[in-house]
Length: 179
Image 1 (spheres, rainbow, N blue to C red):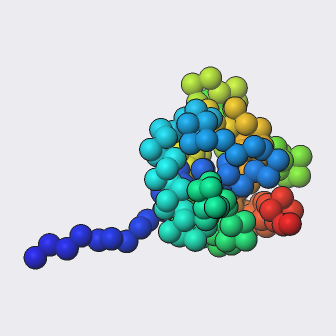
Image 2: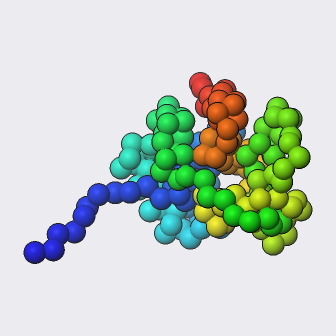
């Protein structure tokens, strides 16, 4: 007898959607708007929101709009993201800077002479070591929304940075998400 596994598992794109939804000063777009902004399909956005609600990282308001539970998201990013979505690195490539090599961390971390971490991207302006993004469309989405780019950079520092970089990124996220 074969049994199906009803266990819900978060996917990397779910975290990207949650980070976008957590932007306080940004208007909450429709699923179609999120789809265009994040380069995901509307059905991927809907599925991400449903998984986030099941994982208690989000809830739906009285109109059915998703609302991030910031404290839960903060705890998940701080304590779980690097284990669920570990940093994967690649070879020297062109791309978009991330982690300690991009704002808001770039000015806070002394840069070494080693190649910086970059998300591989065809139109990338920096040569560095590949740091595989949470989802393939992350560089496009980050290019469209500077506030989202900063959140993704901080999450990457938590996923793959040194203890000092992780601590600084957590502190900066806490400042953004604390009410």
